Structure formats: structure tokens, C-alpha cells
Length: 101
Image 1 (cartoon, rainbow, N blue to C red):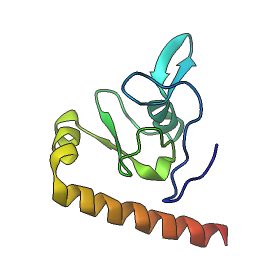
Image 2: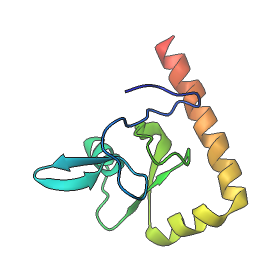
Image 3: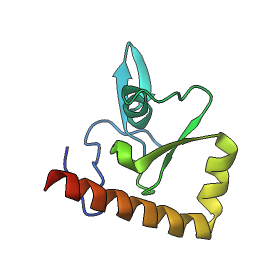
């Protein structure tokens, strides 16, 4: 999968009407970012996966966070959170660049 500016790993497969990557997993259609979160060993049942980068097609686990639905809704409308999330993503990208150097 291609790496975009900003460190996003962009899903190039099927996309839902709401703009999220989708995959068939065990005969069931699932959001790709949820499959990625589970592959990292994260406990996601009853939780929402927040795209810190605000790119719905991003499947870079370093750009994802498990949060309650209410928090995800708040984050979606908070300008302050959006700025902080941008900072977090930039920090993680710097860390990742250092690990691959």
C-alpha cells in the first residue's frame, strides 16, 4: 500500500459509501481500520477507532486510536483536538522515520 505525505498508509481496495476501507473477513464485511486494530492486539469491542490523521482510508496503525464512541464524536468537532491530533501524528511520523533510518 502506498505511503502518502503525512505518513498515511492508504487503503487501495474496496471503499464504503462513507469513505472507509472495507474488507471481507471471515465472510463478513468489515472496516479495514478495525481489522488492523485487532491485528495489533487491541481490544476494540464496543469501541470506535479514531483516525488521528483524519484520513478515513489510512490503515497505518500508528495513526489509529481506540476510543469510546462519545469521545470520537467530541474529537470530530473539537478544533483543539484536531490540532493536537495533527501534532501526535507528526511526532509518530518522526519516531517512525528514526526507526527506519
